[in-house]
Length: 142
Image 1 (tube, rainbow, N blue to C red):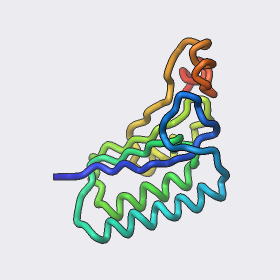
Image 2: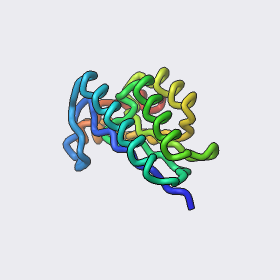
Image 3: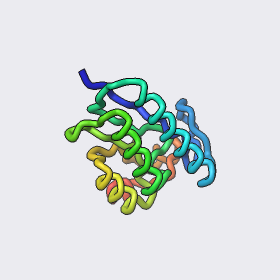
């Protein structure tokens, strides 16, 4: 029976006041180091099992914040280490307020086929109260 992989990407552009998930604001240099460490961990644990994954979920934080290159490296490492199936569901969480064109293109090219947009409301006053960075129009565009 295939397994599912959850890969936590703990970085956000800002911390929402309601969020209880582990996340922090950081720098591209930290994202690079985290990406390298995550890929090494995937290789390490993948070498110790013969499991096949049919689900890969990049959660967070805001995984899309890592950008196209880091996300592509992570998905390539997951595919190789855990023999991700061709029909796997591969999901990434994203903030609809970000410029996502290049991220979505790279994610799809790496096999990603599902996006979870962090859109907690379509009411502007509620978005402000929640500390969300995006607007209703940005969510629609995403």
